[in-house]
Image 1 (cartoon, one colour):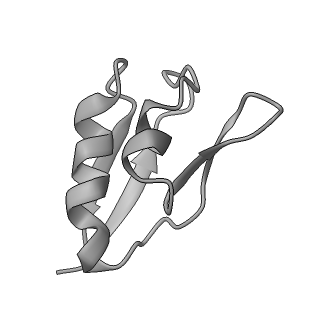
Image 2: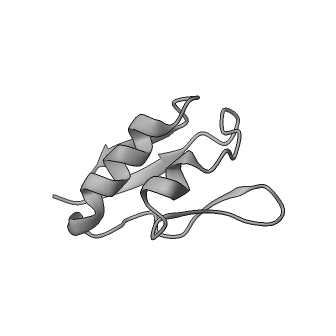
Length: 66
């Protein structure tokens, strides 16, 4: 089933916890902002993305089923 990664950038603190869990999908760059590298990652990355959602201390990341 397809899904999309959604980040609430008003909540995000760019602490890189998501990047630790799923570096294929999330990246905090030198400008200290979070970038979503793939908003619709493949199904095989879902466990990593779900871990990134759990690790976010501000609950700024969610998954939307499509």
